[in-house]
Length: 100
Image (cartoon, rainbow, N blue to C red; front, side, top):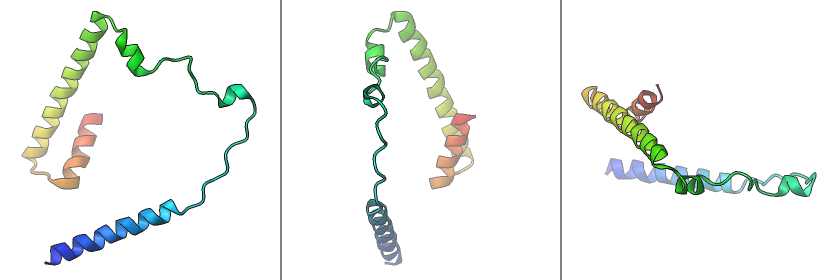
């Protein structure tokens, strides 16, 4: 029963803090110095467009990099399990492990 009450209080606190953030005034838009400054940068294609034109060599390099990341993730998860970390401690550890 206490857990349900605590969850309800936490949920209410989160929702009310979101309402406060939503009610903050929006700053006025920046002044436009030139039409070119307001146009989106279309000179560089999106990542999806770039990937569409990858060669087999580029795909193989990407797959190799993903395999390294996957192996590192598995190693970090294993270390976290050995240390019996749970919840936020586990998340924090995994982030630190993956970025080091």
